[in-house]
Image (spheres, rainbow, N blue to C red):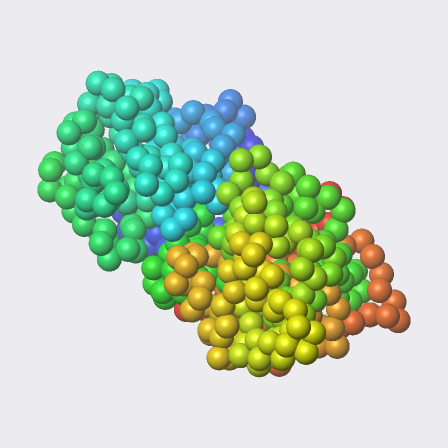
Length: 457
């Protein structure tokens, strides 16, 4: 049989003897490499469009045909799909649908995670839903409502383990049990100690077949900020800055970045907060997402002087809140300046505009993150716009990098050459190789994303 192996639709499916976390592959020309990590099986597609399952021998590395399985081709199934024990090939397809549904609430669910749910019966989707925001019903509830009596005996796919406790909403485990679903497929276990496998145990104890870990990495990445906050008690921190093609620092976001659909507008929608320095305010930024229906972030200004352009758009709090963080010296100097001029202090002027001002004994990354945590922020990105001799005008961002408080890096590479005016990066940090590197285009800007190899990512 002549095979037409199309890499975007190959699904790696571990067999019963496989370690699902060690499944991998590499494509060399027309064949497959001999690799000891390939234990189990994977799916090939022939020219008729039918799939069949094959596998490697653990010893010789020779691919042998094990069995024939037919499944419906889905263009949604891109790349390598790792399935856990007890999972079926179609489980990955429906779990990715759950993830797509969950992302409809991007930026709206914090401090809750994004969750999507799809209910399937006899190969047909009978219900689907997602968690829209904190305090609203969970994804399973919306999906079960749509499915109605068709949920009995069906398979419920959910990107995060169903909750098993009473909070602002009843437990989703009970809703699934009462609906008499026959099987539940879970993307990832909830790291929250209140849940933490209790939901899975409750479902299994009620006689429901439960499969865990389907598309686990995709589910974890979608809720990386929520997971980090649960595990560390601190918000997930991303550092963003712009560079020229020849490695110079830029104060330019790139064309269309702040417009609807631009990478910067989407970041403002996704994150709970954005931190900028007082030097950025002279560009009169509003730091508002242009995405339709976006929940706007908390705009945080760090300053050591309290000498601020009071008419800056960022101090208009009609559409989004603004928080100013300053150190003790700044407030003392400002009081003295106002006294000499017999006028109002910057603190007073800001509060009149609805801006919250917090004075910190020391304005440093730890105290800033403590304030963010106290306000329930799960994710914050530190934005550096202007030029500085050290490469970043945002002194909190520089300190965060040097103290290894940053989990993710976002670099916007603009189609510009800085030439002899180039300001280069100058961080006092050891060399580090970023993980999970990803690139995308936002108009003419190449956006590079990567993760530092931290313990909690």
